[in-house]
Image (cartoon, protein in one colour):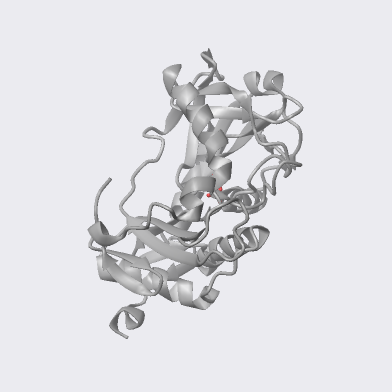
Length: 306
Ligand SMILES: Cc1ncc(COP(=O)(O)O)c(C=O)c1O
């Protein structure tokens, strides 16, 4: 990965190479941390962070699920995000807030361990490497909704995602797709999935998925573009007969799916609905759509100079 000058840790800007933790950090052992993935984009008015407040809302929700009290206010972390982007002087990239139980206590019960917070930024291009990807349905089931709080972005959930990703890589696919406990489509390891059928879009309901912020943006775009939007159970059979399939996520943005388990979806090219939503998404994040400027926070330098 590409290094930048500074990372923020517990109230201080530290040099990238010095942003280290003790090996007995609780969350390193048990996956008890919570995190976010946020992007900022270059716009005519300078770098702008997309839906920062919504991401921080989810971070605090995830922390609360883990009984973790983040020792900073949302406003403080918001200002820190601006500061980091300005100080590191990067036009576009990825912002990673992480809150974790630190050093001082071992054993599964985290209560009593210190809570540490770090924010890092780095330039990150296309997460899945292509506009269209080949997907492998995983043999690993997405975490059962009664096994955890699936609306929370908890580090430990990603062991399931990593297993599926490794399996997909072995099968020479770009990404995995996980099914839920009923064998219906759930989500990618780090993405929500959408199906287009008859010009309308379908996506799995909440339950076995992380309800993504990009997924929510797509729901709103669909309304604006008068495209039918439905949350419903999607079987593997439905998926194979789809007119179009695409993933959404902060990292993956909007990425088309060309093949599932080696079977080509429609003509294997990005379909018109995916294309239309993707175009609007890219226009919005780059500040080209007035109506959605409310989702952008232009990076302000006052914070960096204070
Ligand atoms: C498991 C999982 N599902 C879906 C998403 C998409 O969420 P968002 O659009 O908020 O990035 C992510 C990414 O955070 C994820 O990790």
